[in-house]
Amino acid sequence: MAGLDPASISTMIMSFERVEIDPQTFEKLSPLLDIVATGLNTSTVELKPETEPCFMKLPRSFNK
Amino acid sequence: MKKSEAMDKPINEIALLFSEGSLEPNDILDVVLENIRRNESRVHAYLFVENETVLRAEADSATLEIKRKNPLPLLGIPFAVKDNTFVAGMPCTGGSRLFPGFVPRHDSFAVSKLRRNGAIILGKTNLDEMAAFGVETNNPHFGRTFNPWNLRHIPGGSSGGSAAAVSSGEAIASSGTDTGGSVRIPASFCGLTGMKPTYGAIGRSGSFGMSWSLDHFGCLTRDVRSAALLTKIMSGEDQSDSSTFGSPQMGQHQFSDSPDLKGVRICKLANPLVESNAEVSRAFEESVGVLTQLGANVGDLKLPYLEDIKSAIFAIALAETAAYHEEWLRTKPDLYGGNLKSFVELGHAILATQYLKAQRQKSVITERIAGELSKFDALIVPTAPSTAPEIYDEQALNYSDKQDPNFEELTENTYPINFLGLPAISIPNGFADGLPIGLQIASGHWRETTIYKIADAFQQVTDHHRRRPPLDQN
Image (cartoon, rainbow over the protein chains, first blue to last red):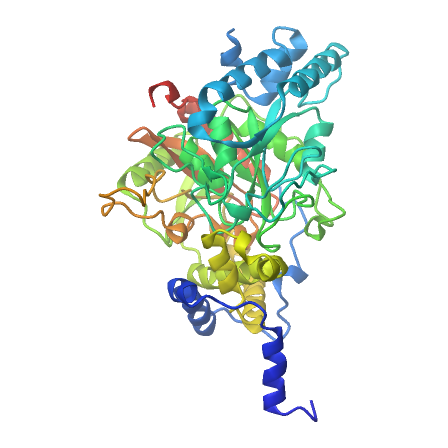
């Protein structure tokens, strides 16, 4: 991304942040964000380079 | 037979009574409309009920078709639809103020199948706002639905109106949507059978969603055989819902009137994320005894990754709900109730990398757990860790001993099933203090028939699903 300095990238990102999170909401529900961040960071689920997101492959056959 | 007694029969038996001429669609409609008149002001299951003249015309038309030997399986069956699902000509709110005056011109995929098979759509049922992050059916715009078994208790959510309608006799059956337990938990709390088939089995086009990766369509009925019939009818490839592409067509399950589970391998979830209370645990162990007596081999299974599922499903549900609502939240924030608005706002804090990591974990976890489950025919666990909680009354002076129903705790046994895309049913398996308890039976992908076999055998030798709420005493 030659020609873009960190400040301009930051400005670009901010321009997409069109929804403000109410501080009280954030305080009340932020434990959920902790569950997400901590859980994903400490997970033992082994992701290989070829592991695709789930919506790329779904089971499609009956198992009798 | 009294007309009201016919209400308790499976749909296929009601249809048989119609074809024999011993009962007519208007007889069933009489009972349903009388129950609506008598109970609706207390239960508040519906947001919209169709005009009686229209319903009578449809019942008359069904009667004519039955006399012509038309074999459609739902002819004259009064059915309620959750109000996040489109029914042509009926208002659809989604339990939200975002769509004032919206009346769809077309039926949703599932409703079109129900109607093509003869169902009479009675009206639209109450739900948590946009069916998202709620287990109470306490709608900020349209009010609460109350549990017919005890009006001081919640019916569960988000399909609480659909559950209360069937439980109180205000419909024969109803539709629901289930993203983390929204069909199965209301079924458990209201003493009903609630079925959520494999992810991708029933098309979701023509309904307001919450989370593309987790949303399932389902139904609420009095018994397993009706749930199997409705699920088969609603299933199939939906050209406007890619989750259904390539999905196999479900066949009609052949039920046996001689319940026998010899050779069926069932595992109890040995490491649930939430501990059930004493009454639910007792009912669960009694159910294990019933299944064992029917011949099933019941063992224990510890499922891996349940804690990982919790973090990943929150990442997916929050991010997808925020994406779904992004435009509306930006342009019409004042039209949201506080609870949903909070969750949608919070979803904007989920990073794209977190969302995609969660989706990649979903691939690995689903494959691994499907492998574990393949050693068994089914998995059983209480649907919810308790009976329906009492309504938390924020206006009461002495509510310090009451707890706001905990969304996370009540859904701990159900949301992993959505994450994995597995089929599951909740059936009544006991009562405590007059409130129903639910047993959840899950199986591998596309193994709905295994679930039906086990659940139907259970219902043939128990009567929990036949009990009716004492609304006249409430």
